[in-house]
Image (cartoon, rainbow, N blue to C red):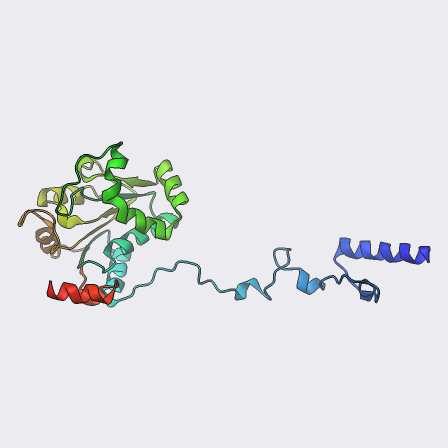
Length: 265
């Protein structure tokens, strides 16, 4: 009896070491059943509850897809032009698509960094003095850009990329004199820039760089006639290799009431 148990233990030990099973692993008195070899092993060498990892739903991957014809036109323009002007009402996804394309280009190694710029202009009321360093002061104005970034990347990754200098927040007032090479530049809320500011920003474009300028000419927080977005966009429409994409109310992807309100306001 003792010799039989020793022999059975030796056989089981060899089976565990070589991944080989036979009927003796499933003795009548055994209360524990080992998994069959083809059920236990996967391509990665570990057990998986799924028949094949290739069959798993990959819906958790954030795939960038247009939700309207206008958004499809904007995405195509960004893919094929180094300078794109994206004009349209609120809720058409201008900022989100621009930032998402910037992240996509950075992740693919097409650019070396992302540069985000936005005018620090209040929407009709002054919020007064803000404490802290430059980033702290600009944080309220740049919140929409952070929201778009965090939707494509985790905030931990965003902070790490900013610490490495791969994502840069650049105030418009500090852009003069710079040449932005190998970068994806997003200029948001450009309707709050003057003609001179936009001219300065557009001429920062360097080699192997893409710039997307977004804004709504009808929602400027500047005094009437001060915004330069509509004028510059009209002039650049006649220039080859520059895309001016005009989104409309039908491209609004926020709550349906947003489109209804914009139509009457």
